[in-house]
Image 1 (cartoon, one colour):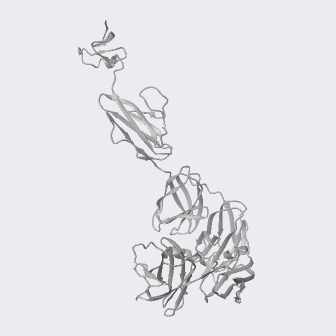
Image 2: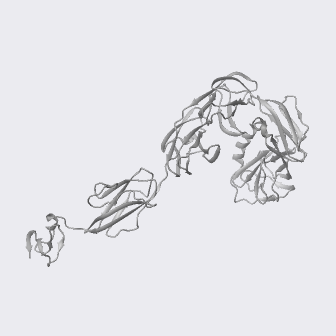
Image 3: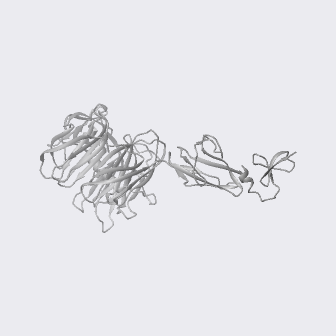
Length: 539
């Protein structure tokens, strides 16, 4: 649970800092590092290891402080000093549970946990480390003991804390096949050992209470009790309770936060998430109370949430909670998501592919508007949440716009113009073309063709043919946009008289002759002609 709270802290302390200058650190002691506040340019550090391996980065300062380790834009790990009295030495250890790679530059930020009136120096020590991991046959120990896995340096005191409600038995630590001496405190919840100069493997078994569908009667405390929940069916689930006090519920899987909920005293806390059948999830309900609250009803219900669709989606946003929705694009491309309505909801959207978070968007004071590239036929989980100013249920309008495809026209046409009512359109959207021939000319061909060369309809001719382009009034033609960019082409020809009415338009006594098809002919034409509105036979 502490990892989860630290994760939330890291989001606030790992801003983009490319424009800053970094103080390069070396292995061993680095002294005289000044802490910087959120709005200062101090406290930015960098480290480039010469060898690939585990490392422990320790900080010492007279002020309570925090440290975050990043691989440029990706937050990796974080640590904080114990909140002891001021003017005492504060120490934090950051052992990132993955290897740092030789030649790769990592960045760090040191921040005070309170407002500093004067500059304060810190010491940063970088040591080689070794990892502490559960035995593969006891892999789930990492879900009930914190922090596992973790990295520590030789001689460092390591404390492993059992999650509330979990009973551990037969816990052992070995390094290189040799046992590592370990002690446990009176509560039976905290195990301590000194880190050797090699990796440590933890083994043991555990039992923990479980939750079932429907109402569960539980006891609540300030630290909470960790429960296991294994859904029988995949789908959306809602975890809720009202204990009469300030309450919070965390939902985790493999130490990753799947959802969280918060409610003030007297309100119901709810957490909604998409869960997979037969997978183990860990639920931590807790309340801000001094004594244990007994007999609190904790409910688990299955919820049929409608999938998100292109267009407007109306989503209920409980105060301080999140719900998961599924979205399966029909076409690959850039999808636009934007929220409308009450900006005070302060919406947040996370998009997952399976268990992997691929994008996170949030706005503390207004609506969201972002575009993300998604693949056709792939089901994504969209986690929607809000933090409205007032407790209760709020409504979020989440609008989804499908990919827009380009409509291209030549810069100019010969003997006429073609105008389009839009430059891009989504699949199935109606597109209108307006054709205007120059004086004395008429439309000959109008064709809409996809960029890959497959026509969206047969060429449009003035008469006849099976058309996908639909003629309208005043020289307009419409078509349905395919799921691809399209190009519009058109040709114009001289207007041809097609009947006596057209022939009579010629000036009287002009001597212009037409055949019976209405086509102009010369003086040498033999046959029946129409001249000045009269039929003549020329031999």
